[in-house]
Amino acid sequence: MVGWLDVPRGWFESFGEIARFGSRVAGLVYSGRVAKFFGESLRQAGILILGSALIIWAFVFILGLNCGIIGAYFVRSQGAPALSGIFSAYCDLREGLPYAFGYILSAKVGTGIVAELGAMRISDEIDALEVMGIEPVTFLAATRLLGAWIALPIIYLVGIGIVYFASYLAVVEQIGDVSSGGYLLIFWTFQDFVDIIFSLTKGMVMATAIVLVGCYYGYTASGGPVGVGTATAKSMVVNIIMVHIVGMLGTLIFYGANPRAPIGG
Amino acid sequence: MMILTARTLAAAVRPPYPYGEELVGQFLFVLKLSWFPMTISTFALCLGAPGLQAAGVLSLFGALDRLGGFFVVTAVRFIGPIVTAAVVAGVAGTAITADLGARKIREELDALQVLGVDPIKNLVVPRFLALMVITGLLDVFAIVFGLTAGIVAELLYGQSLGGFFATLFTNALVTDVWASVLMCSLFGGIIAVVCCYKGMTASGGPAGVGRAVNQAVVIAFMGVFAFLYVFTAVLLASNPELQSIR
Image (tube, rainbow over all chains, first blue to last red; front, side, top):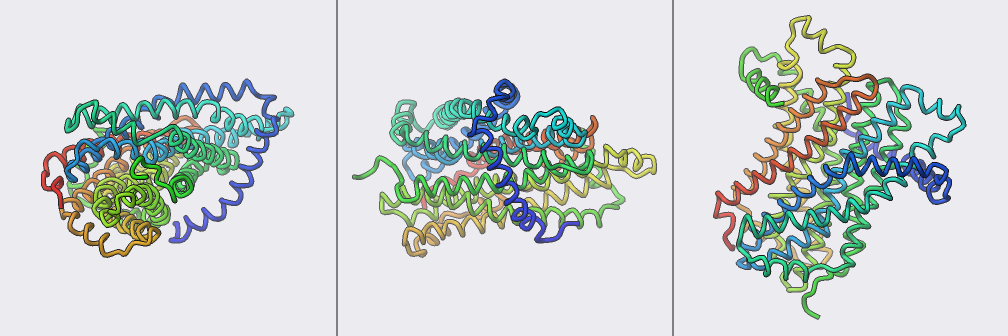
């Protein structure tokens, strides 16, 4: 049975090891040693696009609908229904999208990697790789990280478009307090290119952390088929906390002292 | 999954009730797993998104005291439920799927059936009820920690707290709070059914349990968010008093 302090203790214990494993994998990518397996990286990127992109987009679409109706009703209660664009712009781009991206990525990609690598570890395929002279960390973890870096920014940018479309649908078509032109004017005024860069940075930091956590728990899984399931569940705990902390730090760093709104001087 | 829901509900109300002990055990299990991620996550999300982001914009208008009213909309209606659901699905739901999946792979569930013990009544129903209750109760704590984050954000901007509490309490209605808690209880039901179903149908050797956990958490997230959208739309449209200016 688990104790009350097991989760925080386990989190702190594994955090150092995850950081060490993660820096090793990132080092392999940066030093270019992963270039040996560039084809495998492209294959991993392809798996991400074919297997996860649709689910990510569906999830951010629902998030956009949620942001839209909540924002529309909130500004209606303030007596300024024309301004729902402000809430949508902030909720979609700055805050909501990175979190939604992090949630669904840790659910789909993170646990998927743990299940896959864990199964390889349990059936001794990772040891077999080592015997064949292929370095397993490079071949399994570093290629996945590079694949994620190739595919995910594009998935994220498309996701921005989808979440905008969903908010537009919810605010203009469903609630209908504001005309299409009036909504879009406010909506585009309250964001600029730098916001997209900030949002993308947040999302990519989360994605990197999620892929590394997934690789770590999959690579170190033990204890038979049951162990794979347990490792998958554990990786999800770490990912949920990590996503929120990265999101908060991102907001603190990017917008903490400067709200970047086109109001006043 | 619908069949499992119906059978779970039927088994929950029909006597006998052999699941009392398991219910308490699962309740404590979920609580012990979830309290730490829940606390950190709600605080971080509420400090970042509605706290600093909205406080920055409101400070441009010189209207930082309106942050309390804004927190009712975000922390109570939106962020409290989604963080609770994400944490329960990600932490407790995955653990339940891994647990039931392991029993399925080791053929313990078949053994139970041979012994004449109904797995739905003895395994699924206690988890279902425990998750429904605990998700609703954790939502209260999520709201408390979310409001704490709001207080921290006000203090970071050097604002006195009187205005925050004044707008908070004039804008918060009882409807808001019970709707939030009710929504979370239903989230708990969705998560429990999805995770139990995926755990009990896990198959396919070593990769099977991991894959079941993966699918369970994805389906639970999608279901919870889709349900959130429907519930919020119905709630706000059917309770016009939530939309008036105060």
